[in-house]
Image (cartoon, rainbow, N blue to C red; front, side, top):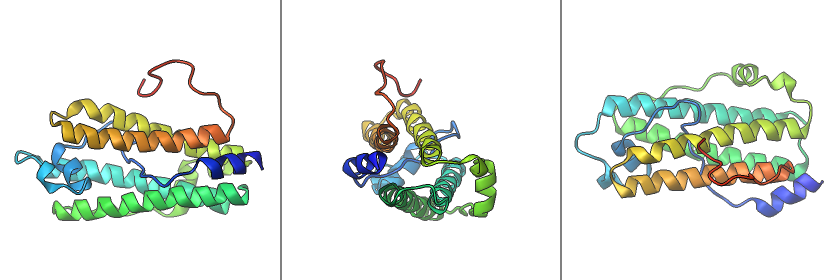
Length: 196
């Protein structure tokens, strides 16, 4: 009940980022399109490279959607926590849809989702035995995404693109912070604790 109350108080609608585990960097053109501002796209962009990177991001969004589905169907979540999981999943679905539209706009073919069972196996869903386990998995995925965007920011020469990436990193950090707080984890004790 304490976790449910904390999460209900902390949740604010936000966006999720999508580069998590890839270690890859989106070009300025791709981030410009994703930000809804095609004028941010650079003329010398590499569309094939952008499409490949966006498909990696899309694959991670598919994984995040599945992870929240596994959590929701686990029967381990209190009602309030389940509501938050469904909300976070809706953010991931919004990013999935934006990625698909961007990939298609760049002339690419979006990667398709795997079966939820495949994701559950890859995420070791059988090891989820409690609400804390589900929240821990979600927090791990969100932290990976936050750190990925922090890694992207320095690659942009255009301050507007760096700003978009920073906003996305902030949203990821907010997701992670809500989950960490709900699990009773302490605040990071050191400055500059993300992106390390």
